[in-house]
Image (cartoon, rainbow, N blue to C red; front, side, top):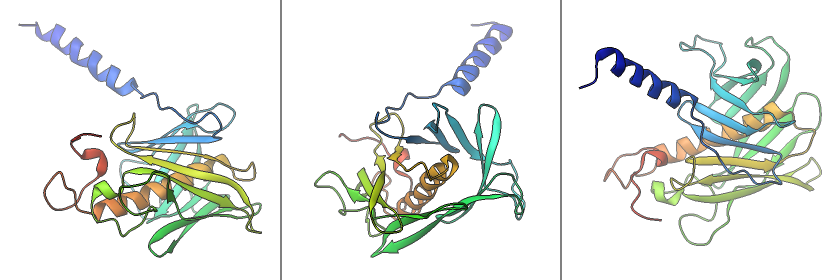
Length: 236
């Protein structure tokens, strides 16, 4: 039986390794942005200029008017996020009066979400609905009509369009328990979209997927609802 001091050291070592562990997530080489879902937010695998970042709750106790999340890169907070459902407002500091970076405004087309990306300084962009890229499975797009969490699994892609309707990029999401993270976001985005707004688009989409899964039947529990990442794999 290990001595108490040794056992404590082992536990401390395991805890430290767990805290430092970050899964290696494969991001498309052509993507200008990439992130994946973690328990308390998003890990940003590709921000800009080769940087990574984290999106986490801004504080352990959120008071009225305070941001929901903070975006941190290289030890510095670079943006604050206010989430209201799938709508996101992004500012440079954790104050409602700080400079606005931009916002994400969702809309729905027959229950399928579209995202408007609106930088504070510059043109706006709009996604098409997120279309399923594989045949079979659930609905042909990421939609609130999903009946079970199995319907949500898949790879989806939305064309990104400028104010004239021309295709200028895309946003994608992969949702499955059989990869490094339950949800992986990536895309090819114009330089006119600030990096923080790329993260905000992923956060908005993540919130929408939460809503869909929370209103779908979790087949692994026989009833009720729950997140896909908590499911017990039965086979690919």
